[in-house]
Length: 140
Image (cartoon, rainbow, N blue to C red; front, side):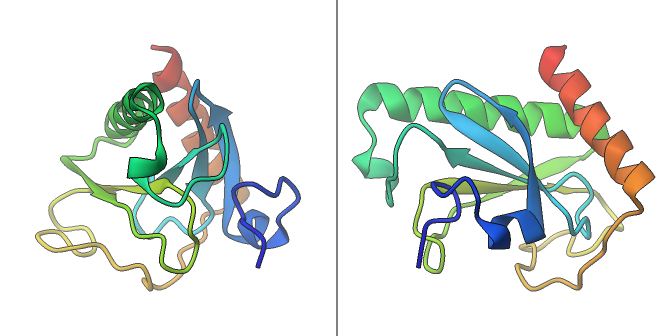
């Protein structure tokens, strides 16, 4: 199976997320399903790697800076009280973090977010507004 983060034309990736922006070491994608409003993925973009320890020290530091910058942008854009971070790679072996904003009263507050949560697709107008809010925070 091709890597959805390395293969630019991945139809599967396009069906579940869309590219938001490119950072020095990563590409940020926003999920189409917004059960967790503001959920994004930060995928290492310089080459294919399966594990964090495969990155050079410079790449790891730069990538983690991108992850932190993205988490901060998400928190400010959607008013999250907490960001959950997850890195698995069992089914999609490429270094990438799931950044999942959480707030009291929202799904799964106080516990881990669900990878199999029901799909909540926003109307296109709301998705455009979310993307714009996230991009504004990257520029702030």
